[in-house]
Figure 1: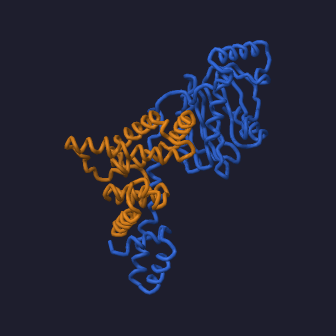
Figure 2 (figure 1 turned 30 degrees about the vertical axis):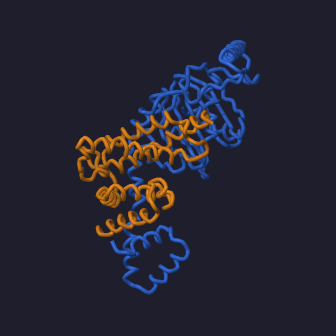
Figure 3 (figure 1 turned 60 degrees about the horizontal axis):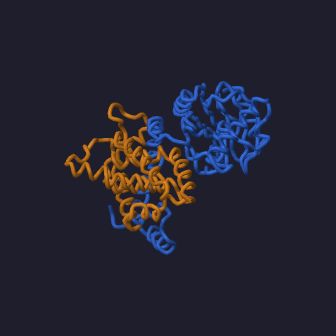
Length: 163
Length: 250
């Protein structure tokens, strides 16, 4: 089983990179942190590949690892050190030096997502970005389905105000 | 945010059970303000998925791939029970090549052959959902192919790797036995993956040939110190035809 686990994990890393990075960016709102978070996730996944159950979804497993590293290591360390994260405006639509080229609607929507609280951003990413069901998002976030409903409704309500 | 928003959004997302959906639909039919709120929430969420997809296109894939831990694709299979025997088999294969014989006809696979075995094991894990969601624009495709081409020493462009009936999805780097292994992934209209792999393994030139391994068809050749392989769940003749096209261009 461990050989099969290792093979599936290594095979699943490459196709998941872009989606992992998007998740990391939505969580951290910082591109350099997103890069580091994805790298740490890949390393951790390979180290713990024996724990992966063959035949289950590698991408979901990688998302869980990324979230765990974010919550328990990166974000908590920054908060503990008193730095937190700089409240950069429009972190999702700029790369620090230049405006990312994208259409106006996408840019406006991403700015709006950028301003949502982390829990709402995460729910929006999972359900509308990844296409997960409410139940799947609830399981991944360890929250009741009602909480997912509230977060998504709050996010949509926030977006509706911009119209 | 109103008290009804969570239910309205769940209705939009098709997440309400039948009884709650029926009850809410009845309220919507009777309440103009509720209908307006439903429309506002629906419109607000409509561009979310496409907007989030923009972030996928911004992902620094070359940098992320370069940071992936290096290593073997898989451990070399010990078909004959141990390293010494495998090395002996490799020696036999080399000897057979020297004698101008086709080693594969005897079912013995040397080190140069192992990379195809490793790729075949990987390819068997890919499903119709692995690559189908990836839809790079021309600029991203060109950048990925240029990166992979530089690593394996081949000129790769969206034009010269285009194949009829297949859609390019991504190109990325792996390594096997310490040599760069570039992978170009396509999907057919059903989403089934087809891989074109280039292994900069310093292998001697070898003519194009095809074979079946389980449900997979493989067509491979070596030229210019690189091994080439087309692999996928398709008829052997189709793999051969695709390989013939690529052999002329790459």
